Image 1 (cartoon, rainbow, N blue to C red):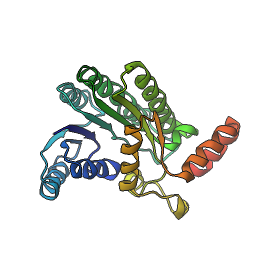
Image 2: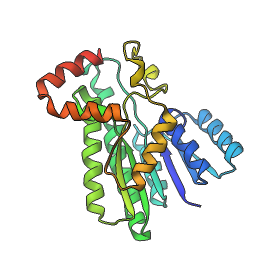
Image 3: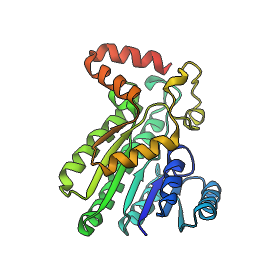
Length: 249
């Protein structure tokens, strides 16, 4: 069976991808910092779907953890989902530089290295896919988080073009607000976000896999967010920066 490696696999979108791919019969390699939760997730997936699940405890913000996952990807996977990520509760000027560097390590360096580890094998086999989870925030301005996600979008599109193989696909996934523990972990107050803007993680994962199969370079989920992104592209940068800052607070 095909093998999928998912980073940040024990919660949120990562867990949703794991459930969907397990239901499709994929062998899974789950990556997370939380070794106990990783083992629990693996056992649950094995029990529910009868698939083979490998666990790889690793912190992608460290050289050791990133190198371990990079080596496993290099051994061969059919689908790579670069999902690991996090946010800061405060603004750019309120966040210690070491925390910002850690974010760039996870959001950018890990995506770069794991994608580059996966693509040569996929190209030689003539099949494979990479989903790099970005965000609708990539199209707006909100500190290092949105900047790093904008990099993911640009990098993914560039990588897809350079691969030059119709059966090897690279896509940036740009969801909006998703009902997960992501914001709670970041200590962010989401009470002001309208209910109609929230998406379900399982629906996002399903749509992302459909878009990857269709060869999309950038996948923006849901007509509401497609409209938001379209409008955002028409608004002057100074205005989008102001709006983004207010929403972020």
